[in-house]
Length: 134
Image 1 (cartoon, one colour):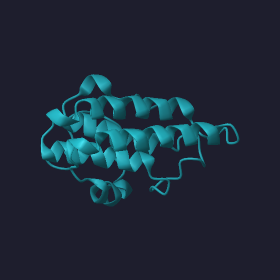
Image 2 (image 1 turned 30 degrees about the horizontal axis):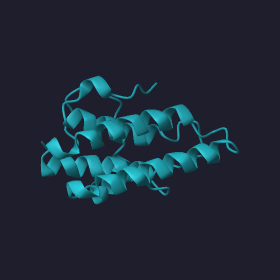
Image 3 (image 1 turned 30 degrees about the vertical axis):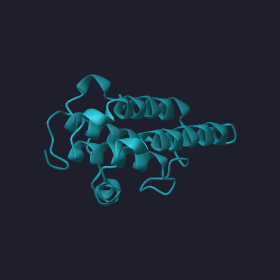
């Protein structure tokens, strides 16, 4: 399983995301999952608060991404080290504020995050969890 192989017709993974995503991919010990889950929850809470002042923040998309990240974390222990690295890469990509595409500038600001999560789901063969992207 290599980075960025295409199996299905998901929305194109933007080339500009590849270096950032690769840099974030690292398998972590299973014991780190509670801390990662805490980072995810804190990120979502902060984004929900920010959305009260900025209507361009797509809370629905944020919650979709959070749900899929929780799904992946719930199965983290069963993944190979390479698969765990992909999961951590997707989670980190979502929780970092300064990613490749500004999340709070356009209503589609979290689409890049959703595409990263969809890529990981595709690589893991979890097709029934894809996030629909218009």
